[in-house]
Length: 183
Image 1 (cartoon, rainbow, N blue to C red):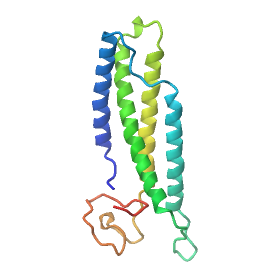
Image 2: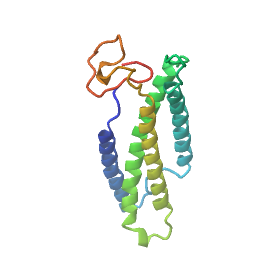
Image 3: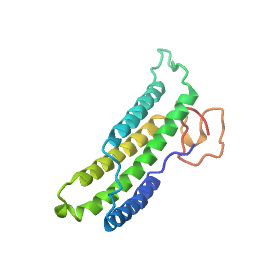
Image 4: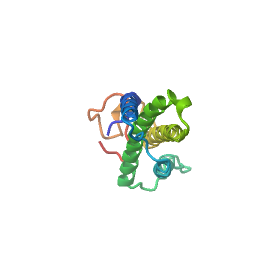
């Protein structure tokens, strides 16, 4: 599995922001409701972020397990399915957060131009809150993805070589191994 590219996340965010801005303009032109998620969606986003962090911390604890006095690592086995699912959840969290951030940032920008004309600012603050929640999802996704990377083994200076005894299996330079040791 390839690591996430923050530049790709930014491109997705920017493209969806333009779409959100255009949707907000069109809906206001035709007298329709502004397309924002309700504020209760922040609770769902919080649950997803919390679950991602809890699973990521579990993988991080396994990765940073203590060493025995003789220098060998004392590791309890980590369920590889749990590690793979944690990685996939982290990446999905980052991509979903990028989409939510972009969409609601575009709507927020559109709402700023008519800020003084509105009698209620509910939509503006909900869009701002949802964009903030999307940003938190992106950050947590990227951090938990880092938790899932296996550090180079002792004495292994080239991270592109993978794990000892596996040889070079066509990995790009800088592409590391994840805790579940899958491709």
